[in-house]
Image (cartoon, rainbow, N blue to C red):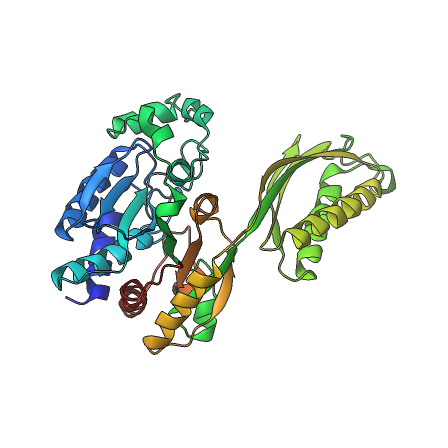
Length: 407
């Protein structure tokens, strides 16, 4: 069985652990999550790893430790968005696991010890609690989030304990940076660049910074049939100018993407001029200066465009995550491995967030992207090919066999 064949078979099996409905829905602490853990533990042991479920719900598989060698952490997340795909997160667990089994079967010894980690929660689809598992290892876990509840009132702490995790141990999970060789994550690209270049893999240079705003626009309701057009204070009309302003700014700014993702209209009636609109704006860039400059430009644009409709507005910055640069040393090691495997190295940045955002707080990080069909992710039709899975596995195997730890 080739590495690619094994990865695809395991991915298909893992995807069965899902709520009914389209795609894969596997939320933190759910029965589907618990069932997946049983499969993962079996596969890890088959690959010669010792296993442990830690206090944050991470499943950790370890190679036999060799004295005097540093540890390379590899992994990704087990959870999904609702009606997501089979490869987002899971590929970053199953692909290196297939490589480690191959190395184990050949009785090879690596220059670093390995911890393969299936992180408990990155997406936050159940508790809005992103990066639960990785923040615990990085030492940045916020214990207050244990009291977060889902739509049924179940707490995050209760969900973790239902998996068998002892949450009292979370403060002890932080890894010692002096003993680490870094963190490496394999992930589908979630975008179309590699496909457009006809490349199976790419090296990530940075993980994007993200900010999110909530905007409320206040107009004035009125009868849609009796209020003259030039006397209206139409909040929805003002909101359409906001949507255009966000799109225009992002279209004309390098290394910036953004979206107005939510619109809620009041009173939302067929014959009433909208009196209010609540909307969200998200901006992403791998360069803090670009994102912060864009924010100031956007707020000035909104002030002018909303005022043109005689409406009022206010906004709140509700979320901000700084970008994270990937280690130049790890990038170079991945470039070398790609070249050795006969592929053209290509560098690109990640427009999505990953567990590396947390792990970078205490260790150098690196990422390898794998081409995905149509650049599609967070969707039931998310797909990769067996050939690309095999190519990525060969790159990771070569990288691990030749991993260099800076003195």
